[in-house]
Image (cartoon, rainbow, N blue to C red):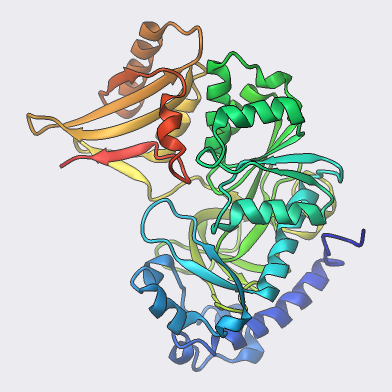
Amino acid sequence: MSDPFQLPASRDDIRAIQSRRKRAAFGRARQAKWYRDKLDGIDPDRLDEPEEWAKIPILDKDILRQWSHREFMDRLCIVDNTDIAEYWRSGGSTGKPVFYPRTFADVDYGMLSWRRAWGVTQTPPGELAHICFPIGVHPAGQVWARGAHGAGVGVLWAGAGNAMPTRVQLELIANIRPTVLVGMPSFALHMANIADAEGIDLRASTISRIITAAEALSDAKREKLSRDWGAEVFDVFGMSEAGLMGGEGHAHDGIHIWTDMYFIETVDERTLEPLNDERPGMLLVTPLVTGHATPFLRWNSGDIVSLHDGGATGHRYAELFPMIRHAHRTAGFFKVRGINVNHTDFEDFIFADPKVNDFQVVLKTADSGLEDVLLRLELKRGSDAAEAVEGLRNEIRQAFELAVATEVLPSGELGKDFEKFMKAPRFVDRRV
C-alpha cells in the first residue's frame, strides 16, 4: 500500500504549502459573488502577512442561515452541477442545516483527512471498526467508513440507532468482535447504558479503543466511556465545512490539526484581534484543499480553543502539527428563575456521578405560571434510586443553586427518544 497519510516533510514544508494553498483559496473565493466586493484592496501576494490576511472578512453560520439553499449556491458556489460529486450536511443540532456541495477533488482530499485519523490514533491496518455514526448525507459516518479502507482498516457500517437498533449493534459487537468503536460520545454512552440494562459487561468485549467526533468530549464523558467500555478513548475534530481536521495521540493532550490542509487562527471573541497562542480564543478555519466548490475563508466554527505547540505523544503527527485544546465553552445554556446554567457544565456534573447512566433536562411551565426543571434519569443497575436521587438533588442545589424535580426511568427509555436524532437532545425547553 502506498503512503495513505501523505504527511508533509517538515514544518518548513508546511509553511510553504500553506503559502501556496492560501493564495489558491483566495483566488477561488474571488470567484464567489458574496466575496467579490469584500476582497478588494487585499494583496494576494501578501497573504502570509498577518495584517493583510486579517483584512479578509470572517464568515459564520448566521450569515449562511439567512439564505435559502438556492441563494447559498448562487452566492458561494463557484462550480457547475457537473463538477459536484456529493453534498455534505452541516452538523448542528439546532437551526437550519446547510448542504455543502463537494467536488471530486474535495472528496479526494476529504478522504485523506479522514485517513489521517487512523494514523494519529495509531490504529494499525487489520483492525476492525464498528462505525455507529449516522450513515447518510452528513459526512461523518459514510466518510469514516470509506476513508478507513485506504488505511487498511476494516469496517462494519452499522450506523446510528435509528438505522440499526442498539441491542442489535451490541449483538454484532459480541459476535463479529470489532476492536474499534467509532461514533459520537453520546451514542457510545447510550450503548453502554443499554448494555448495563441487559446485563452485558462491555469491558469484556473486544473493543479496545473508542474514537469519538461530532460532539464535545469533556473529561467527564471520556472517563465514563473509558470506565463503561474498558477502552482507550481518542477524540478527533472536524466539521462539514472543512473535513476531518485533526485528532489526538496517545497522550490525549490536544487535537493535532493537519495545518497543511487547514489554515487555523484564533482571535479574541470581542475585539477579533489575533491571538494565535495559548489564550482561549475563537477558532477561524480556512479549508485549503476542500473548498473547490464553496471557498470559505476565515470560517468561524463557533469553537473556543487555545493553540499549543507539539504535544507529549511523541510521534510524527506531534512533530509536524500544532495542537488545539477546546475550552469546552459554548453558547449553550438555559436560564431558569434568573439562574444561567451552562449545558456543558451541567452535563459534566451529572456524568461525573457513577450511579447515573443517562439523563435529560426538560424545562416546563407549571400551571401556576412558574418555571419547572425536570431531571429525567436512568440509573446504574443495582443503585438505590431513592438515595441516588436525593443525593443528586442536594448536590445540584449546592452547585447550581437550582431546585429540580426528578423522574427515574427504566434503562433504555431515554435511548428510544435519543435514537430519533443525530445528536442526543439532553436539554429540552418546553416552556410557554
